[in-house]
Image (cartoon, rainbow, N blue to C red; front, top):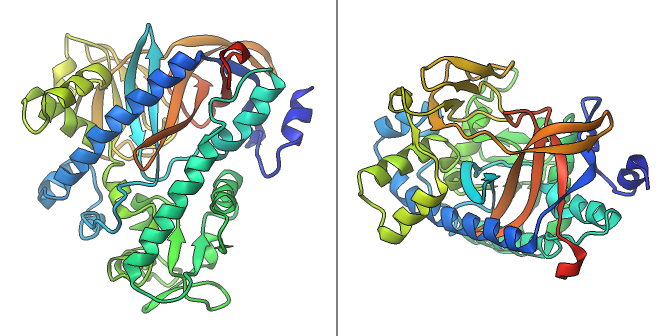
Length: 407
């Protein structure tokens, strides 16, 4: 089977993005034991983040600003709307020399969903491997349905909720990620592109005038939403957050997911670890094992270790810079969109490399493992393969386990 034949079998997928190869005709073979280790590590660090989120809701505005949260978001992000802190989050791992180290947590609007929960099975089948994500789509359906129930109960209304999934209509990855979630939920719902949503004083409506009860915004980041304005200058993003706060509409992921999104949270976790406060001995052991030293300034690394500067709310490697322990930059991403925003400084460990099959032939790539966590449950995992910094030019690489190990 050729690459075109393989990906041609998969409906509503994007094997190429921006006229570049994205989904590889290759498969990363991983033992079932390694899959289990990554999932257990994911479960452990997720408990640390959820405990920290409870602390974050008690902190003053001044501290939250230091951690990078937009000022306009502060009146809303302490809201604990539903029991779940986040429905769909993704942990990104360096898996190297029998060690697992956490790079970051994409708690609010992670992509890579369609690829890992759906496409992975097609690829592993083509390569004669087992799909470690085979049961993950059932987990996803369960957690989506739990979230819908919680979001509907919060509104205290009778009848059946109007559920709408939304995304940018002109972004194929965003659109079909949202449509995949809608399909997986398998309840009556509608997809409405972001630009067609009607945000009024008394609610959010579809173009047909139906009031929306639950709005799922998987790819619509809060840090962008707070700045959104209509053509006449109306702050419709803030109004949407106000309507959510007033329980006129329920937003998913909830605002508690955004509270965990800042990379400043990892700096806070590391500070609490170093000061031996807040976390018990077992939790400190998890942090020591899996977390990288992370700070709000670079000074702790001077003369000690290479480090990476990351924007608190950066995405796809944008604005990331690598430094030697002497403070000299040795790799800088071309895109520097977030260069002036709050940043964190994290110990740099180079991603492991692998010779990977691309349309240009065998290519040395750096590989990062992403593992989803669904409301505390570790789930589908897969690999991004690319340069030293995983960015929007990185490839999707499926993960399979040897067939002799069983399903």
